[in-house]
Length: 557
Image (cartoon, rainbow, N blue to C red; front, side, top):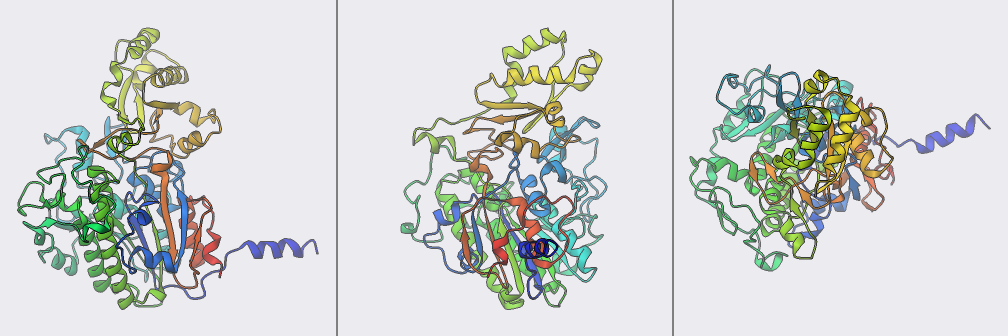
């Protein structure tokens, strides 16, 4: 009996593999889709989009990212790997490369320029702090672990097809993994592109889509409300003073895209429902051309939808624009799912939907209900009196801070070594000065993180989950709740994200597919759970660094 009982208990605890292997794993990631927004803006939504998945699948209503830096690449890679950034290595959208002395953009790779491009001249006049975001070399090589798409490719062999599609390069590349192919939107090329990491030329269908004129079809058109005003929570709140005015787009409906040769035309498409509509249309063309889901070997397609993020940044999540954008995405998603049903059959498709992060309310929105909230300008931090005292304390005349790449502060290591200073002592002294500054809640040094010297609190665990010794900075800065760094690629915007607080960590998780019973689950789960759950559903190995739990409700019927 003592040998039999553990076997039985182990068998009961193990999830059952799906009765039939799906023909397609469809992973949908909606950028900056905070966990409450689907239901908050549900009035007027149809039954074919978000609620098709909710009514047919398991909806986890209290899902969170457990890492501290809730940025795009961090969240996407966590969803793809089931690992924390401390393991998969994508600790931030940008980190400081001490070897080159420049910021490193997460998926940049000079060895693999865009197909048909030669790359950015290293001696060009581009500001070195911006070069990382503008160079055209791209690959997934900075992702240290395998992804769920990699594991599908390893398990099923060369017959399986792996693709990632997004407006954002990092949204497509992270989900396609090392084994797949990624396509993302190029604002300068008016179409979807890839890099030589994946292939040397474009397939005919991509060239045809890019030449179809679909991107230029929005010329001189306006972004108007999809539904009558009575369907909108914010119908009488258009043109809020804290919303960002960008390139003539305005703060109130209608928003004009202008001429297709305008300097910001393609940017305006991405900060509207048009960005996701184009992405889903491209994904349909991919499914058709690549014969996705047409045999017994499961394929994998990741579609990352970016407009919710851009609209949230420019207008804030509590805006008429964000509300309409989500309603329009629901309509486009419904049409896309109908297409997948027609081509493959949804009874042959495992669908998982989540988000890379949530998003904060704007200071203006919070002020209306009496909550103090402010934007934090990090450019002024080295002008604080405390940093002059630190220079005197350590006997240095140069700046102690070499770089700030949110959320990390990088110290001048050369100066510290030159003066023979103790790194732990310097880190602690700088951290003590940082937390004296209004708006900063915590400052944690790398040496303490590396040696496990931080206390066991929710925030410290989130910071530890984000710490990678080769990429993270010397001090992790956590801002007070409702304090934001509102810089988006050099533009000061209304909404932000990146904190460990629930408004940024809170996302939906929905799993729908064959043999899955519909239910709402209110227990707290984490985004690292998703990749192991997909692996368990397929009966394959989880990604290399996966540290989440299998979501057992997916296997209960």
